[in-house]
Amino acid sequence: MTLLTEAEQRQVAEAIDRIELKTDAEVVTVLAEQADDYRYIPVLWASLIALIVPGALLFLPGLLGAGYLLLVQWITFVVLALLFRIPRIGTNLIPRSVRHWRASNLARRKFVELDLHHTAGETGMLIFVSEAERYVEIMVDRGIASHIDDSVWEAIVERFTTRVRQGQVLEGFIECIDACGKQLETHLPATHERNELPNRLVVL
Image 1 (cartoon, rainbow, N blue to C red):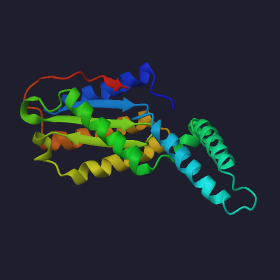
Image 2: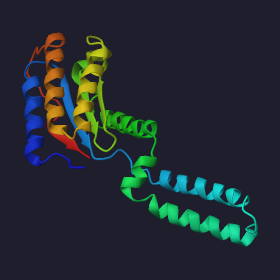
Image 3: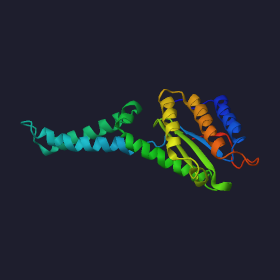
Image 4: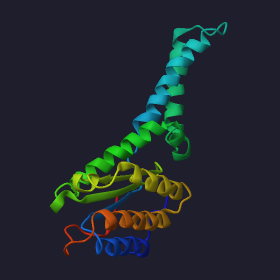
């Protein structure tokens, strides 16, 4: 994973500057390298396999000694626990639903921590990306949700997610911000000049 460089982060901030001149919405972008370290999942898989191995060995003649089975079980657990810590292997053991659940939880925490629920007119918007999980989410406060249907954001998220899968995070951000800007300009045009929240990309 390669997070955006400082120059690329400035491009994201400039894109936010452009759209906020035309809308009352407050847009914040967050890019996380990974939503969780998932350390418990490789250990869980190693434990489950280690529990199954002795049962399988019971079907082999001459290998029924309790001490032998216990030794095999411990060796299996230790070897697999170490093996599954290798990122390329361990990542494949994490169910997609778990990865997305953790990323979604992080997005909701950031929405609150960044005070997007306290903007004037309730017009906060979060564009959240977790790169390792290939996860994108757009969250909006009630002031935006009352004017724009969620299906609009879902279509933008789908296109952005495709970009992230292709490793084109910067391009995805710019396209997403511009697409969101068009919707916000139409439904929540600027009525006065303000900037309650910083426009820089928040990198986790």
